Image (cartoon, rainbow, N blue to C red; front, side):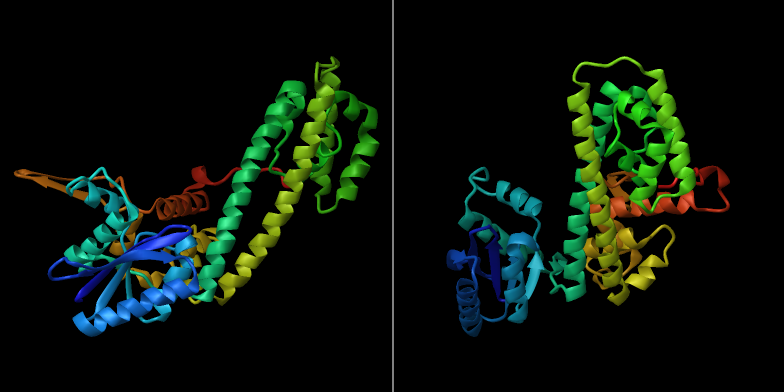
Length: 364
C-alpha cells in the first residue's frame, strides 16, 4: 500500500485526503459531493495517483446510510476499502497538535494516517449482498415499529390507570383481544351498558380470537366495571385517547406480522440463515438482527473473533506483576444484545431447567 485515502463522510458532501504512505505528504485534499459524478471523479483521481505512486487503500468512518452510495461505488471500482470508526478518528485527532480543532480536511487526514499506522488491523469493508441489504432495512423498520408500539402501550396503560384502574390491572395490551376491547369499550359505564352479550358478540366479530380468551376477558371487564361506579373528571377524553391508541396498536400488530413474513422469506433465501437459526435461542427475528448487524458469518474467522466484536470475551489487564481478566465494556451493542436475548430464550425453553420455563399466558 503506497497511498492512503481517508474520506470523512457527511450527508451533503464528503472530504477526501490522498496521503503518500511513506512520507505522510498530502497529495490531494478536496471536497467530494455525495453524488455519482463527483464520486466517480474521486475514483479517477485515486487511479491517477496509483499510476504514479502505487496501490491505494481507502478508509471511511461511516458504514451504510449516508455512505451507502460512496461505499458501493468504491467497492465496485475494485478499490481496497476499510473502516475506521468515528471514535478512533476522534481520539487520534485529539492526540495531535491542536487536537480540539475539528474540520473535515483535518478528519480526512487523520483517517488516512490511521491506514498508514495500522492498515493490517483495520476491518475490510465488503459489498453487501441483496439479501443482507434487505434484511438490514427490514430489521431497522421492525425495530422502529417495536419502539413505537412500546411507547404507545405505555401511554395507553397510563391513561387507563388514571380513569379505570380496575380494567388496567386485568388488561394485557400486548394481546389482540385486549386491544380490540379497548378500541371500543373503555369506561365502566360503557362496559356495563354493553353487557355480556354485546361484548361477546363484538369480540367475536373482531376475528382471530380464541373463545376462551373472549369469555375470560369479558367476565373480567364486567367485574371491573361493576366495582367502579364513580365517574372521574376527564374520563370521556381519556377514553377517546385510549380507543385511538388501541386502534393504532392493532394496526401496528398487523404491520409487524406482515413484516415478520417478509423477513422470514428473505431468511429462507439467505445462505447463512439455516445455520444460525439452528443455534439455541436464535429464532427468526434474532437471526435476522444478527445477519443485519454482522453482515454474515464469513466476516469472523473464528468464534473468538465474534465474541470479541460483541464485547462478550474477557479482556486481559496486565501491568507489571498484576494480571487479571475483566468484563469488556466495549463491543458492538447490537450483537451483545442479540446474544444475551438468545441466551435468555434458550434458558426459558430448556427442559432441564423447569423453573426457568416461561409461564403460560392468556393467548389472543
